[in-house]
Length: 338
Image (tube, rainbow, N blue to C red; front, side, top):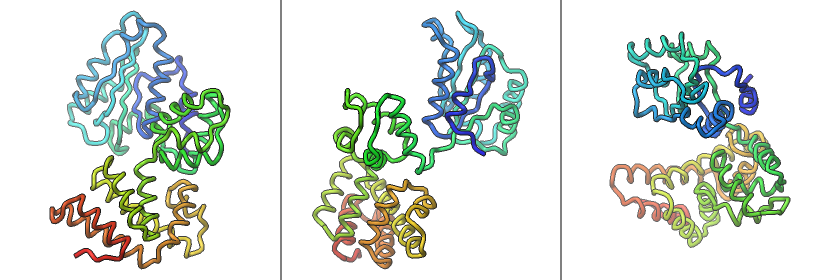
């Protein structure tokens, strides 16, 4: 059974810290892990000398291990954090691997060395050895259906409450990106001042719609054959996002619609379908409602058109911005792309 991130963080104790950690998974919790270590190890202004953060992409692992051997200044321990550590997702050279395993067998006891990695390969010996010593920390991403609890807990911690509809609006506008959610919540706390409850109108006043939200509304306009509104949505998106990303998001939306419509046709509930599609239940309900605007044939045709435009854009046969405009015309007005 996976250990919840909060339990990992609260379980950190200064007297039981490991001399080395390999941390991977959800970036928000990686940051929280480092913050917790700083809280445990660094207490005075002088301790700042004992906190060093380095970019793993810019250094060799043997250089990092040499730095880890340095003695702390004006304190008992150092905290050395290596961000973007690429060493554990691919095979190391024999020299690097041996150097790391030697250090792991006899680590510097006055340094807490933390490697933060985007990806790891658990089949590699260095990773296996780290895991064997209980030094591997894996933070799983929050499931979409766990977002409500995360938000309400964070809001409660700050002394506020949040209306359930406001939770749904916030998720719609930020998605499941915890770093972005934290930033937007901090803005909300500053905005509402002495108000006790965060409402949907507060979210709408402070949190801008995400690109995914704008794509959702764009596809809504397409389904309702509202060409002018669809073009306005496309123009809004084009000011902030590259054509390739917009096309990718449109394709993703139509794929989700196809999958949702198929599951509902087979008798699956919206709640179960959302869970199987790994989307938030609120998003699932909106997706189910949106799917009613399209027949199965229209959805399949839409996806084929998107794929055709994608090919023409990538092969330089058509200007990217013109291609998106032509696509929206075709999807809204039943025109044919030649």
